[in-house]
Length: 340
Image 1 (tube, rainbow, N blue to C red):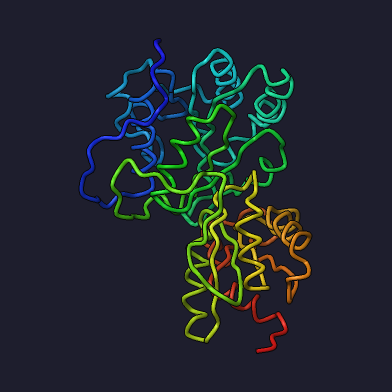
Image 2: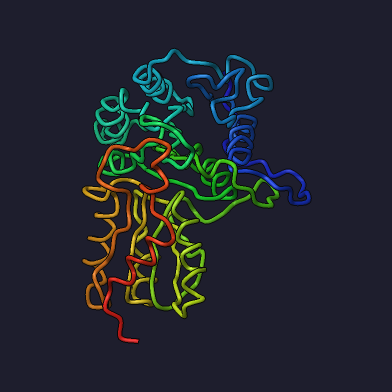
């Protein structure tokens, strides 16, 4: 297999088309594979079926079984073989199919993927991407609706990102594939069908940066993946009550963009973080601690966490009560003492 350039090839501009997040991810994989022969894609049912969520639809017919193929149902084997491929110069992109399916590969991820560069004193990198469809709100049962980001962000050596919209999905996946270090690329399942007008290829902010997606002056809502929409809906509802909310899409969970988040918090003096995972020991605890440590004298109130309940993921009939909603966000903000 002959390596070609990893630079993005920019075709002639075309009119914007409505594209889903799943479609944007598909386009990113297609363009990356066309640009670089070293990029291979594999996982459970990603070949002829095109993946459970059709993210890899049509790729095998275009690139053949040598570039994209169905793996055995063995997540540890998927990650282990990807480590070997990356060590020898390939750029594997593997899919875990569902969030909780990644747990059998946990030892490979923590002991090998995350540590290879450090173990070899920088002589060996692992340019590999682990795609993990994550989170709930799709009517899925347990093992199909987990938010496992805290496991990966607690592992030094892994870059962990989560887009919330089609443009970021395309741009961030292209950047992740081009990275010489391993990237855990988490894809919120409930956003796969969200649409936006896009002209491809599109380049958004670097994947290690947070982005302010709505300006505000009184509260900073820090969200990522599926909860960005929740935060925006809460901000819309609060506006009618005279409360100005700024929404920050974190995008990169590790590394964390202290600069963008800190600037927002120092402007508004209040912050809350939203995520679907359970609150205790969740990713929001780290965000709240970082925001407090770095901006304590600018805060007018404690940093709040609005999260899923501290229970295993519930049945589909109950998930609407488990997940954060705009009403729960606004109710949490009402617990602050306001001097307005």
